[in-house]
Image (cartoon, rainbow, N blue to C red; front, top):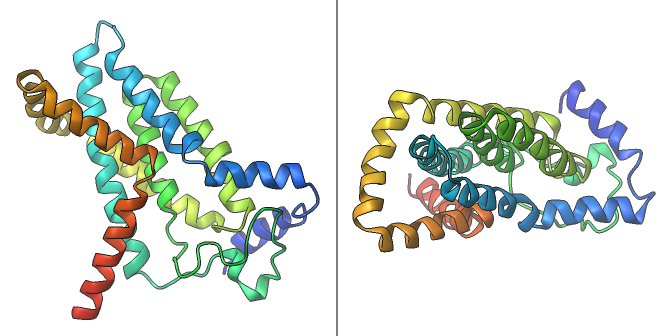
Length: 234
């Protein structure tokens, strides 16, 4: 634990367990997939069907965004398992962390806190939205910082550097995936397929956006188990 992390965590923890309403509000935000991935999934569908002059270009970026989310989550899982294990603040005995109302001491036990896969995913999405609309992208960044990143730091789920590093990874992935040369190469064949076979395309599109809304929970558990098995085999 470094000085930067400990200073911020100790400062925020001074407010913990003082207001039942405040603590439980943040606990709700951290736990509710609807107000996290659900909002972003709604935006993706809304932008996909929105009538505008650059509709084809928007759809290309949406496909790149969705595919970059898979890359982001896979990379985040690999890093969290392969890098040295990092205890989360609420489990760190040296911090004497005061648990906020609504949080159990057993939360996220045995899951390394570095990097934050929430930060990786949502900063990937926010960066991708910038290529569709600067206003939408900025709003997505603000929403991610206030309603997704901050509660996870306050509740002791992550150190600030877990969030910052996860965010930088997400921004890098989102930026690379939405560069014109990459976006065209990835998205155009899929767009052609969506026109030729809309039924399987939209069934798969729904499944993928559902995973985003669900924060890839089932996929993350499956991938985490696979990586653990591979580590023991190797």
